[in-house]
Length: 331
Length: 286
Image (cartoon, rainbow over all chains, first blue to last red; front, side, top):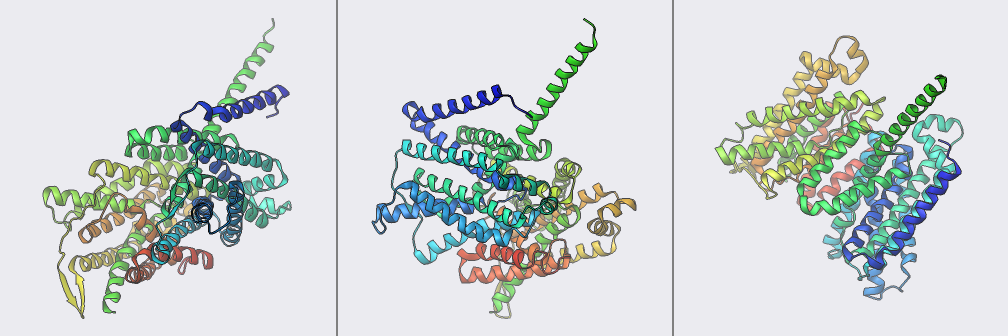
């Protein structure tokens, strides 16, 4: 859909407005709402990172938890070793997060080389199994060999945590928006539509897939690193929880795959609903979440954005029809 | 040593039963039912319910819980998966889409059971005496469960091989379009095979609840992962593969349980990863 200058101006202004509001929130919001907002931003960043690879290439990865968890664990371990025990020199937080992302990137490159030869459900199962093995191995190592029970990290103020996550989420959002418009982003999208056709027109599909997978994983590693300061304790079952694999996929599917707004809408909806209702509704909330997922898959495969788009085309068709009728009628 | 031989075989027989059901669902309708462990859990709870309130013998209540879960499977196939089959343009799309739907099922099933029965561990201990077999002490209920699992799997093999519905299932698994052309009602066969898959995991659950007393609404994923490992090792869509794979994973599971209970799941997942990387079709896959 071609967009006029006015529309672009409105979009730009509203983004600036949202940014400005979020930037000043910590000045007046209570700790409770601040931590919910931090959660929303973390899930948003995770969903966008998931969408970058799995959304555009249609290779559904359920291994996000592995990369999120590695980022989280790396940052937590480094913070513990530098701040709590002085084994390592203290580094500024952004450097730790960047290092964690780099580690995730290398790990994902290695995983990508082996896994991306598979497609469809084989890829889904393999990524799922890898994230589970990561959790099981680290748990077994901690309990059986290292004899530790997770990692304790220093306490950060909720304001610091919020600003860290805020910066991280918007940096990722900006990066993904730019990447989607690049040759690389278009290549990934083309692989999703038809891998054979993409290969025929000269897209190096193997390289693109592995790089896309690794970049998406690196972004998840950043989110994990930033999330490390949100809690004061972490163990493998927490950091590598299957939820971190499943939710980004569910959120993106709910919002709409293949759009930039989709993951944002999906993650904001599900996270805010779960933060407000999971305490009061308990088990019923998860039940409802399951039903929502089934409904998305069965009834609205294109998510909320797909429905909005459909409604939009219907509306414009209807308006055009009216105009055509008006033109036909002599005044 | 003898106890490892028997222990692994007993676990293997039960794992095979679950995997045969899962494999039937996947082979016929291309739906990888990742909620198979939760059907098992439902079976365990139904058996527990009749055992604790009416004192029904767990082996007799197979006749009650079986039809219930069979119906549940058919209901799911008719409401959810039938639409997904209609909607999907390619097999690959169908597989991914139905897999995502199956990831939602545990949320629903686990929490419904959790709301009704609460989260405390349950068990319907039955035939818990031990017998001495060649120097290994084996629990009677484990032997009964293994024996029945093998019998049921064999019956399923005979059904697939010699009955007309079995022929229809094999035809659809091999050539979906061709099967429709020769007059096979594929929706009926999909529904029946999905129901049978659910039924088998239910039977396994009913037998596990006699053996273990630590069944909670959340044990499903553990058995799902085992069943998944079995069919991946054996080959998706291969009946013999899931029988042999079941025993392989059964032994691996039992041995790792003896060595260190912490590593069992890691071992099972490693099987999935290694086989998918080395030979994605599995050892008996087509």
